[in-house]
Length: 109
Length: 114
Image (tube, rainbow over all chains, first blue to last red; front, side, top):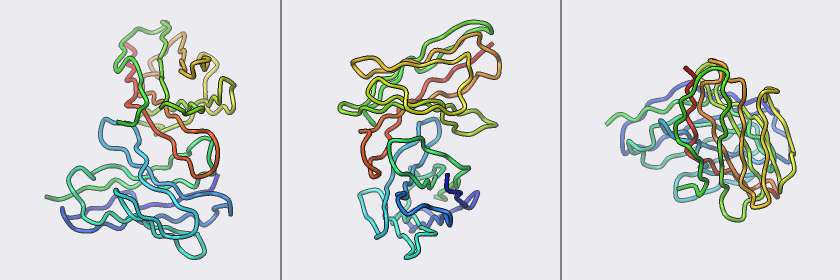
């Protein structure tokens, strides 16, 4: 499994953009980069994924470095509901997800 | 709503007992995964089934077993329960093909052993 490194915690003000970094320098060429988040008392929730190019969906954007050794999850306008633990996970598909410790994001009203 | 249904939401039982956790995957998903989340271990993969067949095993104890039925729902059986088995148990499902298919998680079953 590729090793990932994320900050333990981050804080952001409500309604401001948030950039959550992740290093995955040992990622294999076939792994996608998936991001999940876990809100308090809920199961993990899929956020976004990508392979090489940047991706956008209704929840977030994903910026992937050209060498694929790092990525950044971007929440364009944080709300209180975005307070969660965020996990980046290199993932090929139809196999287990290996969760690290993730980044605990706190949103300040 | 992820489309994955887990029952029961809460389970309280005693040491030495046996329980069954149930998971209904999203419609069309062939793969089912079970994960355990405890305070000291984080989210740990237990076992995966794909279209009724066991596909992968993780850190699953011998006291635990699972199966996936023809209608694709899955059950996780935990026996000879110990205090340390208290945890959140999550089920996830995915289509089962391709690297770009995410897993979708249920809300979990909280198991408390007294």
